[in-house]
Amino acid sequence: MSELERLSRLEGDVPVLRARGVRKEFRGDVVLDGLDLDVPEHGVVVLIGASGSGKSTLLRCANLLEPISDGSIHLDGEHVTDPRVDQDSVRRRIGMVFQAFNLFPHMSVLDNVTLAPRRVHRRRRAEAEERGRALLDRVGLLDKADEYPDRLSGGQQQRVAIVRALVNSPRLLLLDEVTSALDPELVGEVLDLVRGLREDGMTMLLATHEMGFARQVADTVCFLDGGRILEQGPPERVLGDPTEPRTRRFLQRIIDAGRL
Amino acid sequence: MTGPREPHVPSLLETERGTFRRRQGVRSVLVGALSTALLGAVLVTVVVGSPGWERVRETFFDLGVAREALPAVLTGLWLNLRVLVFCALGALALGLLVAIMRTLRGPVFFPLRALAASYTYGFRGAPLIIVLYLMTFGVPGLRLEGTPSVLVLGGIALVVTYGAYIAEVFRAGIESVHPSQIAAARSLGLTYTQAMRWVVLPQAVRRVSPPLLNDMVALQKDVGLISLAGPIDAIRAAQIATAQTYNFTPYVVAGVLFVLMAIPLVAVTDWVTVRAARRQSSEGAR
Image 1 (cartoon, one colour):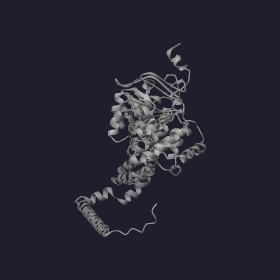
Image 2 (cartoon, rainbow over the protein chains, first blue to last red):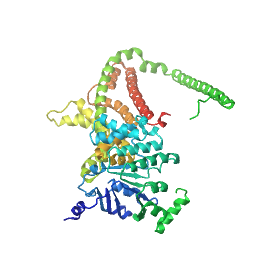
Image 3 (spheres, one colour):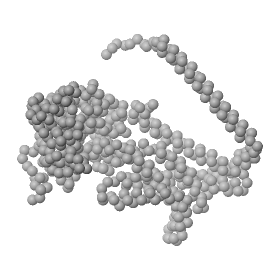
Image 4 (tube, one colour):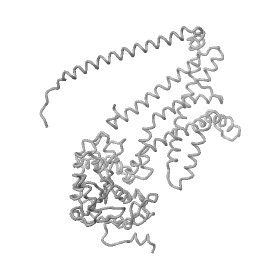
């Protein structure tokens, strides 16, 4: 049995996302260095770490936006870094929210939300719009359905981006520093939305610099350093009483910057 | 929420500022009008007062000659217009196709990329007149069955030449769309083609519509070069009329008609661009 076949039959208590020995190089720079990670069903795993520690790269690799240099990633037990796997069908099962929102500026809010249902899942427009409006209503943005994204505040745009990612009913939601581009007074509305998703049982993997938020939503906090997970565990322990000196130093810098 | 506010009464400061601005406004309009009138007067004096003005007026602006030449020039212009519409559509389609071919990634598409790249290199460098002669005189010279008319061959020469320019304009537009837009589209499960079609191209085309319009207006003028191969367009008709009357007025008639033809094209594109900008962004409305 080849290595690829063995990996695709990996059984057991299957986490939604399983990364094993994931390595990523950009022109000789090692960004991820043999990283292992599990995200269990309904679990919320939070990645923390300095800029350049590989948080965003890991999320992009999980969504197959970046090819990995070594290792494997499984989604619901399926080996998705097998080159024979249809990447588009994998991405349809994963939602992703970006730091800079990345809404489509030439489309109304509703068209942003219904693009994937209409073009990927071939839903009828009326059906897609009904569901899109229902989701927008849930995040309090139904009255913005026909606006264009640039007319919305950053917080509103990011909420639209989250709705857009949810519209495929993904198995896993990836959130990449979703509040980093927001003014401080707008951070709350986005974090509230993420908290609500946690209550709904959404499986999430997110990178953040908001330590207070990480403490609230995380089941597991992972501290990334030099492309590896240096320390992981429940938030109280990793954020409250870290064992690794590097984690301590990182948290101290965050405290000094007044962000804890 | 606060209760209904009292209507705002401008402060003395703001009233004074308003008065000053209005006075400045009136002054700048007056200055503008005066300088325009002055410049106009100088131009008219120089041109009309020049020693040769009478002869120039007779040879370039003779109303009688203009009236006589107009039907022939208009017939020619109708040909220009028809050729323009077909060539514009053809060149836009070809340009878009080539631009998309140049953006394809992956070794499978190497031949397509190479073909597209060499096409844009080649035809942007080749003088239109040479291409036109090769197509309209060279191709019929092959004496193949079913060779299309000279008009069609000339049209093809225009399409392949302008397609190369337009492809580069489209490519610039496509590359100006930030990669994060493709990442967002792909993360939703759209294929590369779908991401191109629904996310990248609509933004790219909007951004490059002013330079595309430039190419369309340039094409409108170059359409007349087809007359080198025989068909009588507006300029050729004007040339014939000029040769008959020894008067250059027909050229001026054709020139004015060309400008008139370009105006709606320019206006429509401006309107479309402004409307899109205004709808999309609060900043675009400025």
